[in-house]
Image: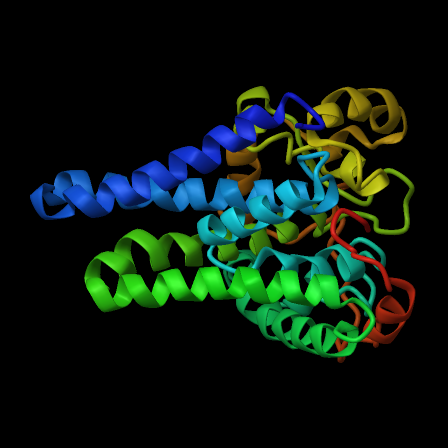
Length: 312
């Protein structure tokens, strides 16, 4: 029933997250803080990885069965912490279609601090309000045109917030540390990674619009999320095919400075020493005066009268 056997890895990570949340909840009273802190950190990392799986699934669904895809989206919503159908408007229909323009609600020019590490830390909080507002407006306008998407979003929301409220009612401390904190880390991380992947790139270039992180271990853990240029070139291409496609279709035309072998080294260089906001070629990033988002929602609702999951 799986479209690609590689998604057994995705399912394993989803199952591991569920096991650790439930198991951690049950044994929490007996755990010393020396065990509790690593558990919380592991759950935060797993929740972020499930957010990456969410991203992949909403571009290229796992299953041949529509029903199984819907069930998987509900499960992913409980691991990521938010209704995953809400990923579609801001990401699939805005960011992918209008990269780094005023119609991209996640464009990196929205943060313009002189100290680059502040741009990284603030990016989520600056774009978060706009993304949330856009999601709500899209849901309102698309409800009569695409009731299937709207019902799926409501189903995911019912499971997500029902589980969180039940956990808070049972034990708010455990709920905060084992559920809510990991979910907040996941949504912060999956949003903030956009800054790493696009700031200082050339959005108008056929290949240089994205920064790629090509480390083998990193991409095994993140389901090839580092091959971001190829993902933008073919959003519906399954994640397991991105590495080969990157080598074949992106690398011949890509400036080699946009293939980063190490995420850690890039973070140090970009945000610590020297910590300057520069283009991939070393020139200063030129930022135009920011303004409100241009309206992209009316067009998206008019065109996307069918279920948008998996499309971009």
